[in-house]
Amino acid sequence: MKNHEIRKIVKESYGKIAESGCGCSCNCGKSGGEEMAKSLGYSEQEIKAVPDANLGLGCGNPTALGEIKEGMVVLDLGSGAGFDCFLAAKKAGKSGKVIGVDMTEAMVVKASANAKKYGFSNVEFRLGEIEALPVQDNSVDVIISNCVINLSPDKEKVFSEAHRVLKKGGKLLVSDIVLLKELSEDDRKDEALIAGCVGGALLKEEYLELVRGAGFYIIKLSEDKDISKRQYDGFPLESLKIAAYK
Image 1: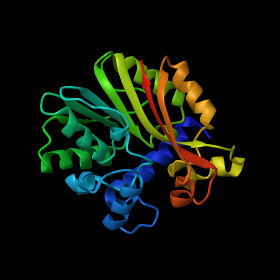
Image 2: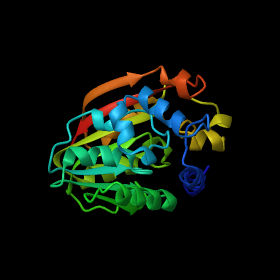
Image 3: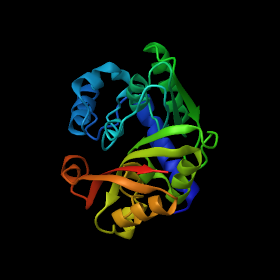
Image 4: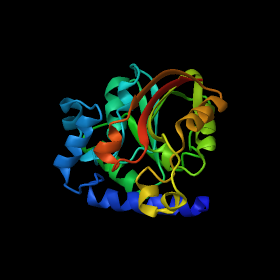
């Protein structure tokens, strides 16, 4: 499947999620999103802070993987309705700034509305692809991303772009889905699996090699294999959490 076809599938799927307000597989609304967020490591306080921004998406809590300090510039790759951005903004404070980038216009509109509703003046959302970030070179202290890079058809470019925009010594904090066993060709072409963070995922070691190849070194590594049964119908995958420095 060609790159533009994959992007079209993902964009249409997440546009629908933005409109419905729920991305959890059970389609059970806000309560389902809350339960999923708790299973991924978010506290009840974090979930209730900006409830409209939690769409039941993600495979971890990247804001918990490392310290985001006051005054930092934080970038979220694939920011959705802004949930992780708003949590990061509380840590960065008024002297800091958070930029969310998403390729789905409906998500950017929804996130911007949430920022206005909840008074986050230090958060900005930009429409763009994570393979071509609308962000200046060497301008970001921390990058976060939650179950989004696996959706990209050009992950090597994503990590290259992340390296470009980070300051020297900057940190990349990612929760993402990686495979523990190769998928069948049919699964690779399945549109629902592509949009659901499975069809386009890489094998774990291949994923890590791309991170290192972009110039990062990984300083932290944790894995959640139970997520396969909780969210992904037993597919051979895990949620990989990494922290890597430029």
